[in-house]
Image (tube, rainbow over the protein chains, first blue to last red):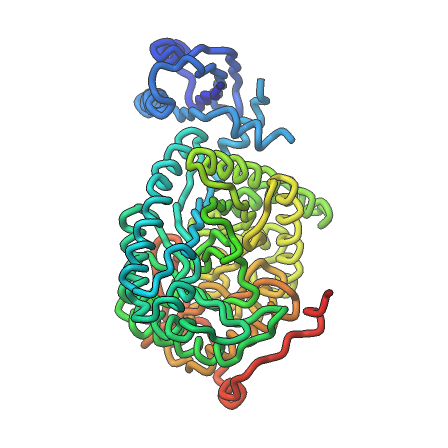
Length: 89
Length: 452
């Protein structure tokens, strides 16, 4: 089971570190990370493995999006199935 | 890894283009709740609906969180109440209050099925149910009602059409202190579908399983945004192809959510209704899609052709994306629920006659149209008859949901709030159709009903 964490906003120090730390706390394994600049915005996409997650997916999502709100970033945590179903046949 | 562009596209669709799942609707059969004693019948209905739909809202919220996609409404549809009423007799409003209690207990946004199917004539319970609709919609907040008065196979029951004109008017009168909201929860159908997840016309047909999950997707904003990126000189085949591709993606999401909800609730998955359902929010309008195609404003000449292209492309794109497509599937054109339609109606560019023509090619019919308070019951019946005739002859679903604005005239507006929106009072034709309507009887089924 994998999920996608997307971070969009102004680039600042420590975004990757903080999100990774939250993942580690909940035994969520980071599988892949991509960073890019899209329309002047910092965009980071993390693919994470949630098979061994120690809290509910909903709690994890709240923690990460909560950090996003504090830091002025838009963070979404979404199960990978939504992207697979929309973009692949 | 999934393509970054695809991920960002999905997120943008949800956050900026108002993509959402409009509704997860649980259809529940009440056939095993019928009882000769109306109180016992109501008890059985309450028990069954609350048992089946106990986890509907919580499951919907869980799926929203998992996929990050808003599920705007959770709803219930039930077997047309005329069926249990036929067995029990008694005051039908008891059923209305029972369903309202179910909606409150389960926490759903709407419950539909205060309905009767009378396309060929009235059976036991039908007339009593129809006559109780004004009261039922006055004493409840979440209940929706529908009546099917015609079909391609049966023709049009003009006695029912005549009756429904006065029922629509009476419902508006009884709720005049609340912006005539009762009439916004009442639909008169021709060729009603039995697995429609959208309100106010949802009911759970007698041919449906005991319980099932139907999903209605939305997404006019996504289609408009996709078309906005297309060059203005792209030809209409390209426009249709782009709509198809977008509809495919939207529908895939509906299929995913429906499948997941059905697994979690342990209930069979019925259908995805791949409708473009607008909301009054800016950027979520079907009219704006038509304008993006190149019309200066919705309602001008060319609107019907543009809508026909859109409606067809949505179906073609969506049909491959879902294992079972059903419901109404197409593009809705509810005036008060669509920012672009409201603007066009306000400035007089969109008229009732044009809307009627558009209903020949859209997925349903005259929807959420505010008409003057002095529109007579006969005139409303005649509007219903016209619309039913379009549905009957074209073998498609048509419907009428007009709201007589009691005490108001052209230039005034009614505001319902929420998804129902607000709309200006639209002009109607006051020439009397009374003798035609009072004739009653049946309009015979057209030749195209003889397909066997």
